[in-house]
Amino acid sequence: MNITGLQPNTQYFYGVESGGVLDNSSTDIGKFKTPASGAFSFSFAHGSCTGNGNHAVFTAIQNKNPLFFLETGDFHYQDPNSSNISTHRSPYENNILGQAAAGNLLKSTAMAYMWDDHDYCGNNNSGSGQAGTANARQAYQEYVPHYPLVAGSGNVPIYQAFTIGRVRFILADLRSLRATGTMFGTTQKAWFK
Image: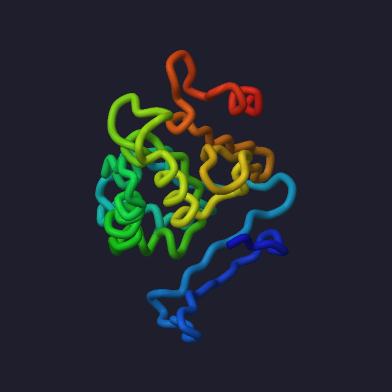
């Protein structure tokens, strides 16, 4: 779902409604804060190569109260690569959202996420043409809050950019477009430049 009309520098809360019933238990209500307008000071947390969604580092990050958490790859570390969409969905559910420490952080803090090989379609130099490419892209779009993807939605590369204050964050897709001689592909490279 797309959320529009949010005000700057505002704390928002959200809940999930299923079958007409809102889950409003205190442990399931999420929150995030929008950035202020213009130049301002802020802090964000960074992580990579997580593998363990119940690690104490997620609680430590949450206690720092960053504006957002930036994950730059290998978030669930499960190496999915399948034409079965469940193979790509379950790592987000079981290894990240279903774990108390990571789940609590992500319910209390905004997130930006750039995937890498262990999240996309397997270890090493996995790139375009993998059996699970379309499913990896779909699972990302279903499970990861993200800024509008430059290429649109559906079976498209996962690259995006956003600005907070005077800082431009660029999250490239160095996996699903990767091919011999290029990590970016032509279109993403032109966008990046």
